[in-house]
Image 1 (tube, one colour):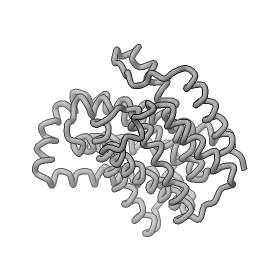
Image 2: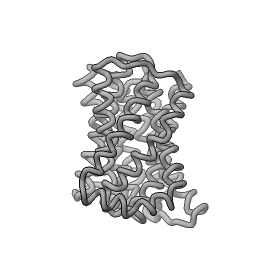
Image 3: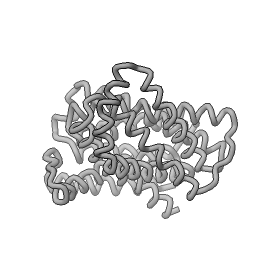
Length: 297
């Protein structure tokens, strides 16, 4: 069981690194979020063959295939409000708001899956959420109601719904790689519907050279995102969605670490990540306590 938790913690680690890379790509290159969504989804589909190293997929049931279509759509559309938010506020605030939105997971899990945890596990879940949000936000920044708040609320709800639907398919289908390969294949195909819109098609064509110029960065970022998704799905196949969401909510902790290291390597400052030492210690302790509570059975 310990190995499952270690794998589950890889997801927030990879997601934290990915959000930093995506903030740079979104702010510096692509002005339209839909264009960024197109190239990200397109690049992500390149890693579908790697799934075959993890297991051999089987033919899904009609019901599960319909859910895979929904998962593919959610994979694309949640990115739109997320990238808009990255343009309007600090990366740390976006991460914190995304973490806050995981409050939807226990609600959706109970409604759709009838999943109920112990009171101690729920206490652990909310402790992790509180500490993770506190860790990367200034005292007044998070609760200032602006467009970024509502955008990330929408993005987080869509991601939470995706997690619950993924768990639903994992319950009915023991082959967990199916929940990886089919949504990835479908999202890589569905993203071409963006070309139906003239203005978006022109913007995609305009930025194609920029995409190929930064192709290595895109590939690196989507490989990291792919590893995060693999960790998420594999852990979710064995853990409750609430437990998985609680572990993913520790992403701001990893975000803080990467934001301190990356400027030394790439000479890019992330000034919004200056957090007082006492605050770090308090948040780290709360997160550890929360994880212990969530992992209790």
